[in-house]
Amino acid sequence: MTGIPPLTYEPSPALPAPPGGDTPAVVDLPPPRSAAGAPLLAALARRASCRTFSMEPLDIATLGELLWAADGVNRPADGGRTAPSAHAFNEIDIYVALPHGVYRYEPARHQLVLKHAVDARNLTGYQDYVGRAPLDLVYVIRTAKLLDAPPQLRETFAAVAAGAIAQNVSLYCASEGLATVVRGWIDHRALADALKLNEDELPILAQTVGRPGVA
Image 1 (cartoon, helix red, strand yellow):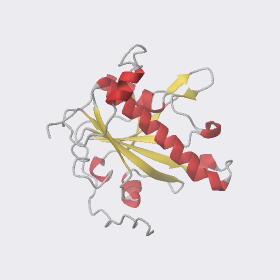
Image 2 (cartoon, rainbow, N blue to C red; image 1 turned 90 degrees about the horizontal axis):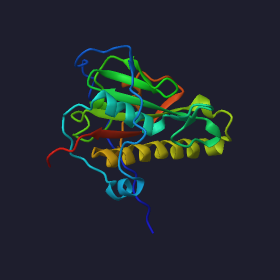
Image 3 (cartoon, rainbow, N blue to C red; image 1 turned 30 degrees about the horizontal axis):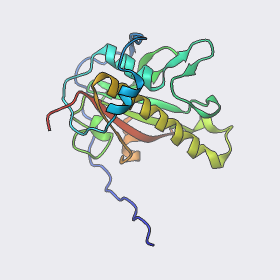
């Protein structure tokens, strides 16, 4: 039995675009509505990947709820998150690529902190819709947080944590009638440069979010 050939691609020639609009250094996000959304089983029934997006921007309330659902603090007493993480390493950072800048989500303060004042959406993947959808999330491993984990388990821990966050986003989108798709086909080097990542930070997964478009 022959193995599946590896997926190959050419390095992306694209560059980040100038930001489209004001780029505040910090964005305070509204708290989530505790009673919002569809019941869990209804959201699971609706969960699906969508690759057609409207260019309509997401409002700040929806963005705040989306990020809280992704990996927000749901147990303030001990800083527990909505997504599981082995030994609470919390090694996955969420980068938010918007038309007016790239931000890092800070769960403890429920804020977006500016990382780079560019429009890097087109560098979050090779698919043609990534530069047009209003929001691309990038899940980044901060490897320094995994130094206390056994070396042979670090990659597994990070992959499971990123997958849990992506599923939280998918369920929120299904609950609120949003479109989303998770993507692993990314140019890691170009994306790391666009996000201004440090040497110990590695983008592992991306996820596009928006309102459904017309096919």
